[in-house]
Image (cartoon, rainbow, N blue to C red; front, side, top):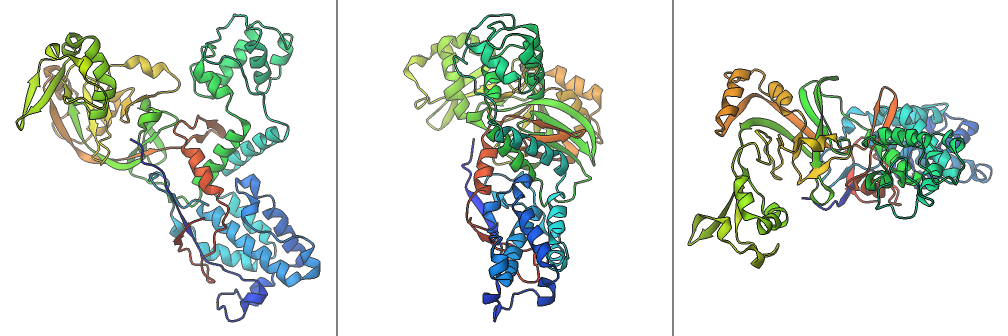
Length: 518
């Protein structure tokens, strides 16, 4: 279930007007503060603002006056440069995108930033460009992200890498011969490992060992299965353009601005595009496991909730959409097999719910828009929820659970569910969740699971759960990027690039923002 994203951007009012507007405005900074920097320092400030692209921002959003204005009207040049700097500083500190509908995972804490202090520093600094530089390096991982952004911008300036054309629907197998796709693949891999270009003639049609090693390295970097087989998912990753990578890095930098202090509470964080769950205590990773998330047409929503209960041997009340789109075709093919897997069919007649034998129903007469039954699956080994369900109350009916489809965890991209989170190692999370809950040691858990009876255990300590969407992470100083599977980075970037300039807060540097659009 995806809620359409509608941009809600917050703005702030002008801080330092040009001299012509200062009289009577009541918002201008003191003249002594404005005059602190020399004309040469103001020129250096303008030059630093012109390089905001290295911070992921677009310099065109901050109207920097032309250099020649410094000669013809130095007062105006100073005021306009400072105003542009104030707008840039606010975005560098608080993030250009304040919020987006549906993105409760975006975190901002303007109160923690002390915008007033930064604005004061900017206005009184002898080298205001240094204030901009300091602010640009505040976000977590800024150095690594900016270095990666510079690398991709250099690639883009050189023309980027070639797009692989031809039939990318068919899998290219190691050792095979393909006169069209192998040379194109070799040209693409040369951007990752230049030695590939020297391993064989550029137009060689053979998928050789050196090319295979490069493809496996690429798959590992992209978080894909490292089998060297180039199928639809690897083709898509290969054809992700330099510009798309730049976009993701710009978003990653902006999302990290204005962050609140990191929680010290025990908590669960699920990064959707990286398909990972982490149980954290402060900065310490207690548990780390793979997850399966919602596919593109049934996206996992971003949530900030609390896990409150564990349910053992859960039945599955099949959502209407799943019943119509996923189960109806299977009932048509073999209703007896569905019955054997614990699926029960129900219908409401005269106000009462009655169970219907699926082997007596002619399913060919029903469609996605006409299916009067609802479906439930009994608890058991074949149940879609597995043997354990972790309840975290929310309006989207999203929860975490076990799954019988264990083989899917070997995949690199794991967007297979209808929105809920499937867990690679549910028993490990269970042990942590039940910690401190009286009467639920491992012996009791095993006894209840073996009974196949549905039981619930309220947790002694509920656990905060955050489902977030972060395609770019930094670990050990290395940047790891994943596909923008839901297009949310693209949505965020469009919000960043709206052309109307934001307005700054008040003359005293207040950090409050007023609702507006840009």
